[in-house]
Length: 344
Image (cartoon, rainbow, N blue to C red):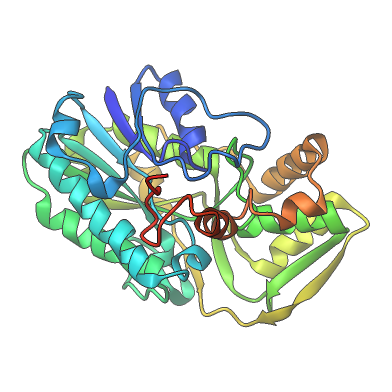
């Protein structure tokens, strides 16, 4: 297939492009490259690209590419970044996503894979939630995912087939590393300070999935017959990979060794608390076989941080924390308040 991947230079996209190419897909990227100075152990795989914001893509842009599918990853990527200005989350993650889908449909693109999130379940209670569970988003980021799914579903027809991949909380090594997601963050704390530092009280539940297992899920959806996945949602992750945050911290301490678990000065209960059921994706996509566990991912990160020379200064700097990098670019005048590159 000939596929457009938005956000192909980001944390997930930079690992997804090689996975898709290994399956003989032709990949074109679309990215603003906000995080061009945030490489860790390697640079993203080179791919033809449109240097565009998803808010500015036109029908002409996409029609010229003769695409079979769009994989839409590009978004303001986590809740602290979304909280910078909640309206920007709706402008980019919601309105920008719906705009992209509309122009893709007008350009004749038949498949649209949307990178949604299990965060739309929000505060989910004690039961593991399947795709029919009610939505309880507690952040603009989570609400934007709900509303995009609803808008895409209203667009679905015989000519346009959207699919919603509700990723569990991602972790793992990437060419465009993030240290602001829970597993990566806890390992980075341990690697640079000798302590595992919790930013919550440790009780909330999180479903977790390795970045490469997410990439494999998108590839499996591309391989599936359209009628088997049309206008459907899939929780993306692996059975048995729901953890309380304190459990993750204990795994990190065990892998790193000689490492105390403690609490940050602002540690408090977290209203985001949910477990997720992954039965449907394994039942429907018979070729999907997640390979990673949290322990194996922690071992990967610990080895990478040591080999890559992760220091306390690097961890405290902007490169691997999305909010800090955006703030740095805005302060330098490189980016406007609307998160578009400045003319200069």
